[in-house]
Amino acid sequence: MTLNKQVFIYLIILFAAIYQDFPLYNYIGEIGRSPIILLAPFMLGYILSNKKIVVSTYVVWFIKFLLYCLFMSVIFIGVTYVHYESFVILDENIILKTLKMSVYPIVILITYQFFYSYVSNNFNSIKNLFTAVYLMQLFLVGFIMLEIYYLNNPKAFFPLFHTLPEKYWRVRLLTPEESWTGTILVIFMFLPVFLAHYLKVKNVWRLLVYLQSALLFFLYAFVSQSKGFLLLVLISVLPLTLAYLKNNKYLRNIFIITLIVTVAVGGFLGYVLREIIIDQITTSGTFGTRFSSITAALLVFVLCPIGVGFSGFVTYFPQVLEYILESSLVDQFNLEEVRGYLSTTKALSTKTAFFDELMYGGIFFLIFFYQFFIKRYINLNKIKNIDFYFLKIPLAFSIMAGIVYITYHVKYDVWIFLALTNVFEIKYNAQKNENSSS
Image (cartoon, rainbow, N blue to C red; front, top):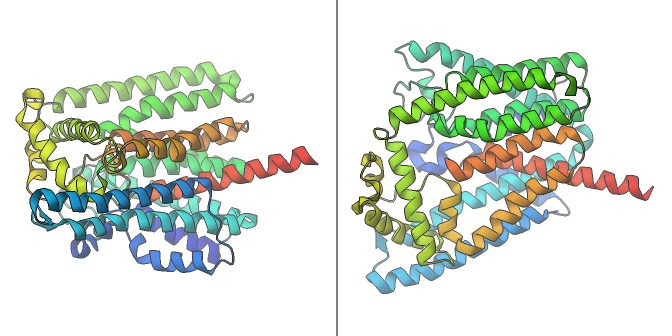
């Protein structure tokens, strides 16, 4: 394992991707939550420096969806002005708000294309990526151990690393809140294992990866209060891990033992999840926010199935949300948090990528979602190499997380991982075609 220029470039990008509570947020807003925004011009420069810019089918669909959202945004800027004779909604100019909302997908596109291009162009030295991913996993193990140690300490843990210096009583890594950590942890549990198998690294390094991945999982699983993480572990991570063990001819003999252990772990996590839900369902603002905002998003989609763009989202989502809150449908929930969305465009969201973008793009988003996310999983599922399970598991988790409990705006860990799945899918198919033609 050697350190060189490529390893450092990977480390910088990976660290920037998992750092999602960067203090720059306090000066420029949500887009400043990650240092990726500072790296975007350099990444764009690298992309443009290539003599030939190769984009995958997934990227083509991403660009199509972005252009569609911008087109619908322009239309609904006009619709809003006709209705209200003003471009100002909730004390914010919707033209400026649309431009600001457009920055997120543009930076995401740059990040995705850069990582896709950089890994593809340097695939012959892919071991450098493994080195960087392994070191990042090691960093996360050390960081989470320290953070758990500080949970019962009244002092804040590394307050200068966060946008707010106050004490936080849960594990959140370098993110603003615990719910943001799930994708980071699952990706860095399984991606190093995949790379170790793919590259056939020496047994000692492979064993270290296994131990660190297991440690990362158990350290977080037994202190987690994230309902979304626990739920998705139960319905995606554990079942797919069992499927891998069952299909692996070397591990099939210990499948029964592993099944017993997995059921025990799943039972424990299910019990913890049940207790959290019982304790918080009527008191926590999370349930009220999720249920009411998702219901409002579905109603916006029904009323305008072609989508309302970024501008229409700012205009009409709060109105429909207010209608939902005034109904008796959500009376049993704590609605204090979600009522704050009715007076400002700040943090206006359903808190899930799927339902936000369903409003932006309507039916066209559903087509994009299938082509970009679901088809990606289907294509990976067609690959017979059993080691690709270690890509399928975090992919399934990340997709479902975007449906259940997170947005993707500054979740660059997810976008970089998606770019990697793109690279390995293409490389596998190219190698398969070479073998069949020879």
